[in-house]
Image 1 (cartoon, helix red, strand yellow):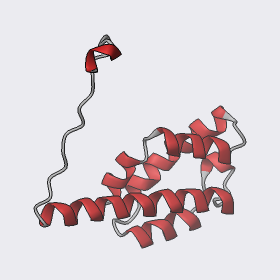
Image 2: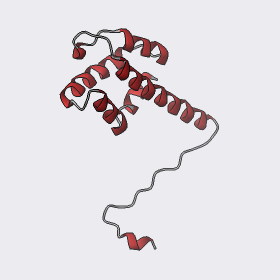
Image 3: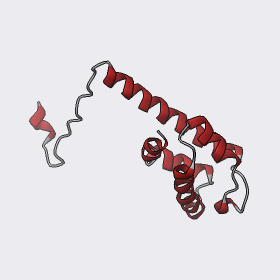
Length: 115
């Protein structure tokens, strides 16, 4: 489940929250995010154990320190949210519910054409 969660943490919401946690320092955020991806791949597959692992290891991008509470809490919230989304999608598939595809208009479409 961890690789699925990692792929879900590539969204703009997570990136912005991470940037905000680093006080809008793009360089620190980028350095941490690269190390975070590697650590997520090295983490145990169980979400709770992975969170314990992430909280208790020393981070090179943070000067050999553990995660500050605000960054850990933000990461924990996003990981748990992604876990719940993945579990819900799995339950929906088992129940025979198939998500509808997302239909998007072409960028050049005239909005008046829909009326």
